[in-house]
Length: 325
Image (cartoon, rainbow, N blue to C red; front, side, top):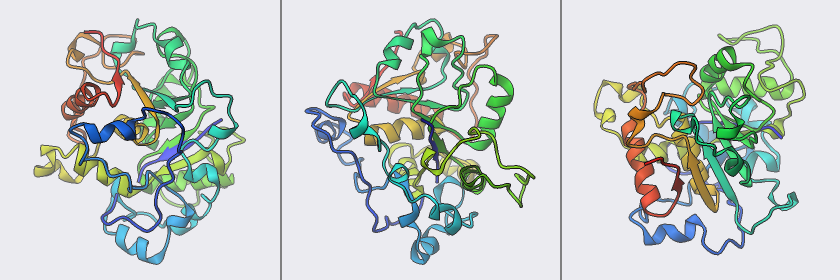
């Protein structure tokens, strides 16, 4: 199956509440949170995904004040959100009841692209989870022993996906589920791809429908992060000092951070692989790098803050973070 999870943040939460899959898992993340230092940080009323029912003139007025992934400021949204009206669009794990699952808990592997995975031989372990989340580059062919071969959800920004397909096209397997990131481009791309129509305006304009997601992609393959969720993650989990600098306008949690925190808010158990750890200087930037590359830092993300958050979530028992040391 194949989904796009697109990213959108706003202020006050609307009236449409999230639908979290309720399982019989005896010790899921939501049950453990109250016993940790994160108890007051988590707000389970925040909608993780947005779909057709979220659109209204009042909500548009509220969220149009926020741009980028934090709102609807640069998007003509009604026609795009309107097509997201299936159970697959509003539920993260819409196929859970139909699957032959081996446990009563929704077990998720969230796989980043960190060089720590090169030589890890974690592929089989990753593939044994109920759902596997991947992000951006996500090259699989030739790396299966280290990163596995299954993908349930693929989170991306359009620019990163385009660059990844150019650089790693032979290794990418895009027969998956997609989560998108930057509204102004991704809403347009999602609508055109799922309705098999050409984009008739803007920088993405073309004579033919987008082919990033395959020829047979349907609207059920797309999920879009709610802008309130992105803003909540920024303000509560990753409120960086960059927000006090000139980088405030471009700062947001990284694509991988949104993916991992979304999993923490929806899965029963989360195992994280390929995310930055304190010994990151020992590894190349990505597991698929042909030549060793040092990790680079940019002003739009606070990767060191994210690294500290993963350590804290791991130590609190809310995730299991793969570390070599």
